[in-house]
Amino acid sequence: MHKGSITSAGVVLGSFLTAVSANAAPLLDASYSPTGTNTLIVGSRLSSAETFTVLNTGTMTSAAVELGYFGTPTADIRLQIRTLTSGLPSELSTGSSVLASASLSYTSIGTAPSWVTFNFTDFAVTAGQQLALVMTSATTGGEYAWRGDFSWPKFSYPSGTYSGGRAYTEGTSTVPQHLTWGDLSLCNTTCNNPALADFSFRTFVDPTVSAVPEPSTWAMMILGFAGVGFMAYRRKSKSALIAA
Image (spheres, rainbow, N blue to C red):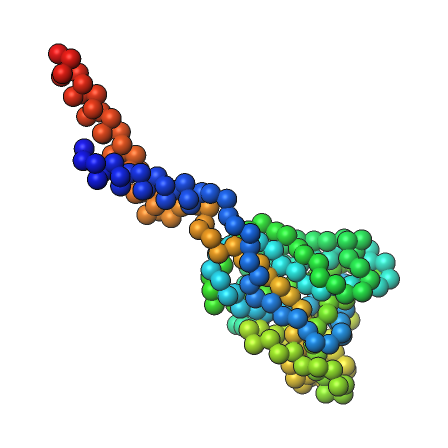
């Protein structure tokens, strides 16, 4: 075997080791920080969501939002990353539409809205992909509050300015404005033109090489190992002939 073949095998092996090496610290990806101090309730009567656009291809590792609570919540608050259906967050809380899920107790959240991080199992994302952060809770006492910028017709709240998505709410039969995902029209049953609204959020993506090699990398690695084995066989055979 030629020296060039040995070098190629070494390069393939080095590439493989790089691929399975530990990833670097995740980077801040898509995010939005409201200018106002208003919050929206998240509880058993109402779910909230913010759609967003991924900026970096890689693996998403966590997300953070500005949360607070009042009263004494009786259940954890859950954050899910869901796919979109016709531009809206998926209404399915289980299955393939849920890419990640994590929960926090109110005891790990302050009463005043502050940034809290939800860590979940990493999943692959692609730059330009549109997803949704969905906040839900089964609490029947106390409520959670998610900070955001809202502009309702009858109030002078600041408007959300995030260009990669927007805020949505989904109610129940006791909140008839939105039995499915809709804009933030909560002031009364006819107030359905609330201008712009966005929730606070931060997503974190590790843009480094995936820990699982691509099929082409596996193929090159196998060929490289085969070459190294053949080289050892040739050397052994040559040594045997010289000894004879």
